[in-house]
Image (cartoon, rainbow, N blue to C red; front, top):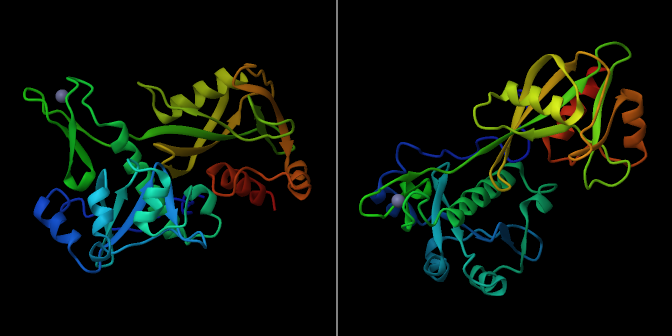
Length: 305
Ligand SMILES: [Zn+2]
């Protein structure tokens, strides 16, 4: 699974990290006739009537650029510079009118049929613009911050501060735990708020001062009372909703004993592959298809074939 490109990833753009710090270079890219603007409104894509994210060229969209709260450089698609334009300061109808869009839509609702590259770039745009809206002021001195480096840094404008703020990423671990003996079984849990019968793999945020492995062991112990005898990295997924990075593991429990915390997890139990296949056949999906959860379960099921 580690080689597999999950939804929202894939490195489709050349982010041009060595060039985007050059203000003149960025300005010149914005006047490139082939440049592409992706307008967004508050975490949503602006879409046409057939639910396709709107793509504009700067020469055709001076109003959009003038109305933008922020215009950030995402990268180069071949030769074409790609920018995300934030119209969140407008109402949704105003943003749609400016962009020539029919509606707004979350990329997660579109991912099932968008090209993987298109979904990844829209998610990247969403995450980066979200960060800009949350970092308008310096946490040290309270002065306004301004974007630079094509929108990949914000700098405090305070006279005696000048602190640089970088986009935040919040890692979370997600774990498929296997039982120690035979038959092969994996541990799935019903999370607080999930409907009756809805089970998924276990997950949690990495805390300060923890490695990913520390977080896996702590979360499994805290939430499910499970001690692990082994764990291995499976892959990761960009999850900019708003700032996540999902890091997938497979682990083996030291014993079959399970004790849920009753707060985050209401119930957890072991499932065989046959049980999971039966549930899938009954129309109970194994996680959202765009999620690493789905791929962890899918690869575990396939390993038993
Ligand atoms: Zn400051």
